Image (tube, rainbow, N blue to C red; front, side, top):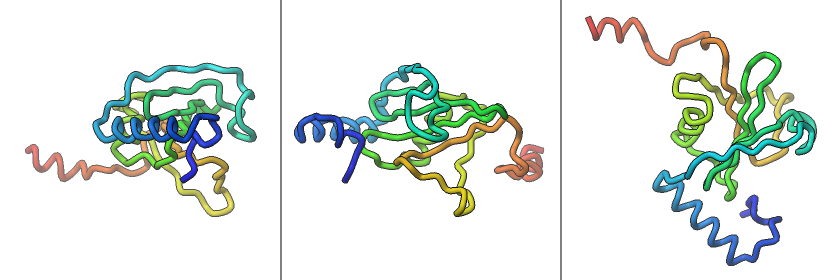
Length: 145
């Protein structure tokens, strides 16, 4: 499997050790504190990636973080192993970086709009309520009455 460590120059043994630690940390939920990294806009990536000027990282995940002109916040998430974050991991990342009250969506666009140049997973923190609810509010009000 190709991972973010493949081009790191680390020995195979060192890569194996780091990936084993990531696996263990993910399993027990011990990610460590988020470290904020800031860098000049345009200094990483190509195309839309040049808009990023900060990232967050811990023992398991790296997250590029930018806010669009619309106010929508874009989190681009990856792990050293390249293994996709689970739903609970994505929820935790959203809670820890954007807050537990924030609403985020993962988008599956029309085929012609797909941009998949890196092994990353994206959360979009929206600024307005969704046009639908995930909870049937009339049912929850009936239950509490």
